[in-house]
Length: 107
Image: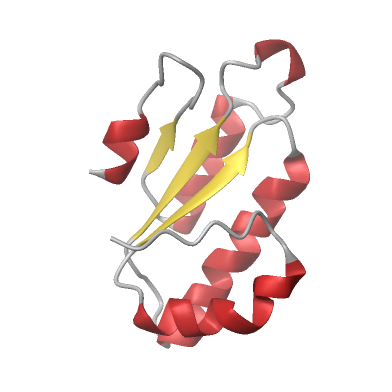
């Protein structure tokens, strides 16, 4: 498994499509504390479909930072609804110790 963590950084945009062409599945991770990151995940999903020339592809939508409940701006219901509309599986995670669902997201 190769992991490319671009964190939305533009300097990776040239490499992104190459990774998409070679990838066989993707985790699109967004922060529940940042609505813009969810919007970016949707854009990346559409880019994957365009690069792969497919209408569906193995992608998991991952909501991260669920431990930051007071800073949460994207609800679980919103994440699940979006995932359902895109026909994607959905999982909520936290990388904070102890991690929540991190192993489940990558297995």
